[in-house]
Amino acid sequence: MRPEIGETIQRVTGRRPTAFRGLGGGCIGDVYLVTLDGAEPVVAKLGTAGSGLDIEGHMLDVLAPHLPVPTVLHAEAGLLVMTYIDGGQGLNARSQAHAAELLARLHGVRGTAHGLERDTLIGGLHQPNPPTDSWLTFFRDHRLLYMAGEAQRAGRLPGRHLDRIENLAARLDRWISEPGHPSLLHGDMWTGNVLCKGDRIAGFVDPAVYYGDPEIELAFSTLFGTFGQSFFGRYQELRPIAPGFFEERRDLYNLYPLLVHVRLFGGSYVASVDRTLGRFGV
Image (cartoon, rainbow, N blue to C red):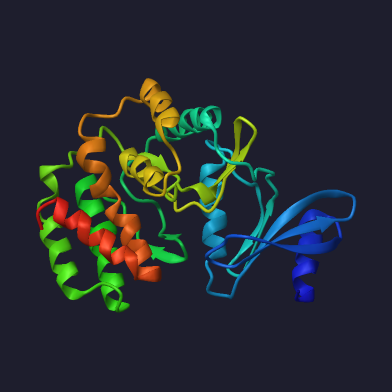
């Protein structure tokens, strides 16, 4: 550990670090649980100067008034220091219902446009957020087409798949309509980013924040089996989901996180994109 890291942590916490233990996760940088002399531990995420950890800190600050997230103690491009949330237990029916209540409240936070005042990150990748009045335009240009282009330029998405995604993007209005208003989204809602303790959600981490249609968040939560019926039953009670979501729009919206995974990893995720495109006739 570089000495200046410990010095910064001592300065922002007022306590001397006595031990660093590696934690799992963290696409952007290495994550450590930092034991402090005479105080609760904190979490330090370390990266290079271009890691964008200052952006992650900003995203946590955006969510903090509305969702349980770590409190940011220090944020710069290569170092993020946060409070520690103890929540390494698996989700159960009650904690999923609690997650539904928290996310329904988050999705009630209205924005003036889709996007955000600055670009953010998802899985360490650039995520453009130009303020856009139309959700359909935003999802088409700054989610589907943008990430498909990035995956193709990285050599992980075949050109024929990019052509098919462009064909699908030109017909999105067959399935997607404009939401009533832009809603605040966590943006990266999968199991690894949900901290659970007992029957309650302790907190959410690693966001990819922007304002958009909550359905893209709900879809993402099903891609890797994070939430199931206990979540959606409670969410429906609080914020009804329009017909057609589970039958069509969920798979359409999940093209975005699938393309993120294609850009990062390639491999089997290309086949998943291929199956989804086939479902929508392109």
